[in-house]
Every structure is written in C-alpha cells, then in structure tokens.
Length: 132
View 1 (tube, helix red, strand yellow):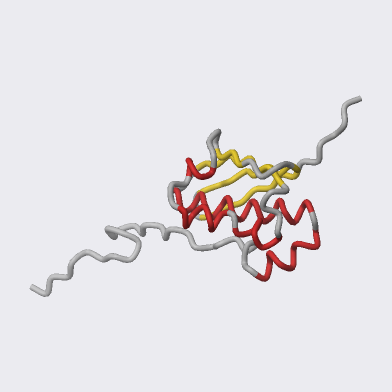
View 2 (cartoon, rainbow, N blue to C red; view 1 turned 90 degrees about the horizontal axis):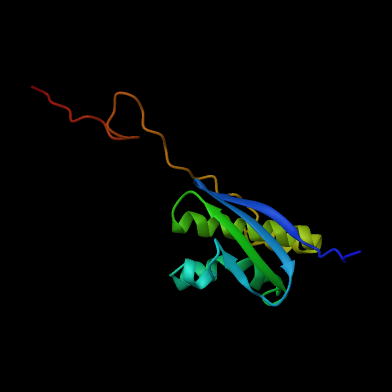
C-alpha cells in the first residue's frame, strides 16, 4: 500500500479574488496557476507580501506551495494567496496560529468595491446640480 503524503488545503479571499492553496512538505517550490510565483507576480513587493506568512513562521524552504487563483486583479490575488497560505500553515501546525493572527495574516480583508446605486452615475457620485 502506498504511503500517504500529508497535504493541507485552504481557501483565501480578497476583494473578488479567490485562492485555493495546497501545502505539502518539500523544498520550497511554488506553483501559481502553472507558473512560478516570481513569473506570475512581476512585482517584488507583492512576492514579499505573499511570502510573509512563511517568513514569520520560519517555514520558507519546508513546504511546496501550489495555488489556483481566480477572479480579481494582481493585488487582490496576492492578498488572497497570502490569506490562503496563512490558513494552510495553521492547518499544518496549530501552534503557528498565534504568530499569524498577531501579524494580521489570518484576517480576511473585508474591503470590497461599493456597488453602484440606481439613479446615480457611480457608487457615490451624483449628477451635476444645476441651480437654473
């Protein structure tokens, strides 16, 4: 019988972006929608933001990360990936929860785009007022 490999999966969300993250013990290989994390996210600042949960817990080269990202833009997907990664780390080791919670990695960012209201050109914008 084959030996079962431990694998942890979780979902992260930000704005309209959703990240399904899978974490398995390995050497630190990243796959994001079939590409490397550095190729998918061109900005170094976003890559550093995504890797923050792993750096806080000291698990940078201990896990292989595989992620499927849908919806939103690049920044929203980066936030979703960070959120999902933090959740998978907690599933792998519950003692990491306190560190990740304190740094805000486990908090789902509730800010969303405000909806457009009927009879207006935008969410807050009003039509131009004419006195005469």
